Image 1 (cartoon, rainbow, N blue to C red):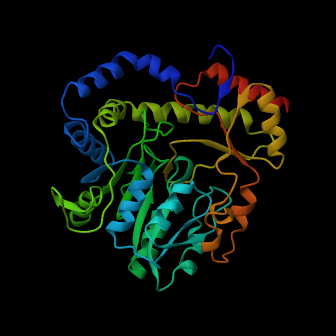
Image 2 (cartoon, rainbow, N blue to C red):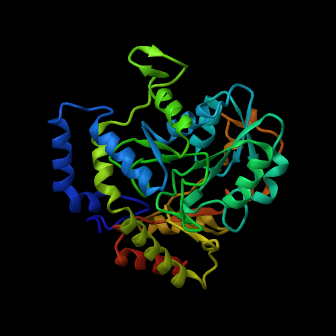
Length: 367
């Protein structure tokens, strides 16, 4: 617990204290190696993480946003193409689509798991549809049996947005192993987070792999010669080395998250909160623990007065934002709009003490 007795939705200080000596040694070794960008540590992490996801290839990039953009560029998405996704997601999902030149087409979410509603997916596909970005939101994977079946029918690509789902499983398959490509974020808050930005594209397709390698470095296959238009998106050696160290702990981190989620589930099941639902065939990695209540603002104010600081993921659907609403088709997004007014996240991270979990539960029950 921090000295100010505040409980935050996420923090890294305790984890850093536990691993400080290792982390500082890792950084020192990198600085003494003579290689800071796209070196031995990046290649090692690409190999280690792609094996973890049970795929052949990994391409380390600057961020999860870039991972999505490069994945879209790799499958040939271009100006005025359409990419189907959800609006209840982080901005980067849609930012990447728009940056690729394509137009986002939103499917409503299921009100039980907050994931893409596969029953409404097919009706959003047109002749212009080039790809589906399925967002494995909050730490739980989408229904890829149905998504891949529809994608195959229309000959479109599936990109998994796995920014929040490292360590999750669907039918015993790792999150990130079920699309044509997948995009991961290693932003500090993530299940596998570094101490800065970082991301990775994962695929089993060698042709897409080679294309992604070029796209992350100006479209170059050899130095100073661009084969195609690309971007500058390189994972640095420091973050890769730290992530190599933390990858060994990822399963342990997820188990701790699931234990906290189980305590919340058991102790809050008789309250008025609507608790998260773990779908059949899923192994939820609980990036965040999202609940619902119609009196969200009052609850958050009450928690804040008691030094418990939560988060809303997400208060504004992307289609409602000034930066993107001009691109929005008039799809029926009833659940998306409704849930944005009710959802919020309770404190959730591996080093959250059980004492603080109990305090959160106690205060919520007193509301």
